[in-house]
Length: 115
Image (cartoon, rainbow, N blue to C red; front, side, top):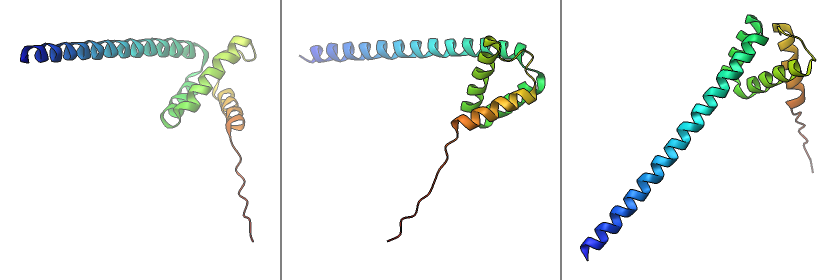
């Protein structure tokens, strides 16, 4: 009787271990894919941006990574559609960032109701 429980317990442990290994493998693959995509994007941006613009984007990525990501995507899209031509300089990047800021900024209005 004790052997049955031991066998069941071992089977449960084995299944859990296999599941954990599968999850870790999936996570590792996902991270590798993200790193590969990031490297491709960096290579594209290296060709499209001037050194000053790349520096500004790197600084922005440290502070506001979501804005930097949006700016990178915007630069790539604008170049692909032909709306701007490479190399994208710092002034053009600033204009793109300002436009992104305008489109994502929320205006808050505080209303005080007095009785």
